[in-house]
Amino acid sequence: MLKINNLHVNYGGISAVKGIDIHVPEKSIVTLIGANGAGKSTTLRAIAGLVKASAGEILFQDEDILGNDTIDIVAKGITLVPEGRKVFANLTVLENLKIGAYLRNDRIEEDINKVYELFPRLKERAWQFAGTLSGGEQQMLAVGRALMAKPKLIMMDEPSLGLAPLVVNNIFEIIEEINKQGTTILLIEQNANKALKIADYGYVLETGNITFQGKGMELLQDKKIIDAYLGTSKR
Image (cartoon, rainbow, N blue to C red; front, side, top):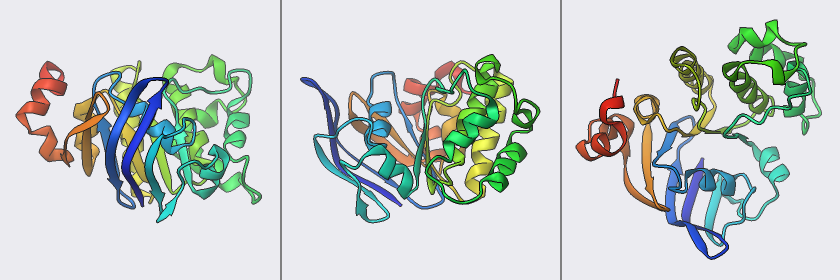
């Protein structure tokens, strides 16, 4: 579904992404892991059209979308759940969900109900301002808002960051459920153990380069990956 070929992204004079290749098959979960500053978020932002790539190809369903505006990319079927959730704090849960469907011209009530089925807590808080939600609830809302665009591919940037362990478990269960319902997922996650457990395939980024790649469970058992990214946090 998504093929990234020789992607380069520069910030000023700094090369943040250095010619990486990533393939995301349809209906799969693919994860990017690596330390802070490795280029993971930059890669997602380049796919979403939020930063300009300096070279390479980003093919979505065999169409090169490199250089397209973000609105066009969303219209083609790609959405991003940003790091830090970025909900609209002064709008209600329901209003946030409706904003996620801003490019649609069809009826959205059925899809709002689907989001509520995934996240019953959001239905309970439909008329509550998003800024008053807990961190876990805001993450649920950010995912639900992205789903309202009816994406073919949903990208998630650190969905478990700063959340309590029980909430993290719930978020990963939801990610798997979204994938089972047919949506392709590209996931960035600091919790490499949990990410690799659910991923069909994984890539390790280090200072803008891909240094390891393979099936999720294979990477999970690789000693170099364990030493560098799992360590005592493996559980």
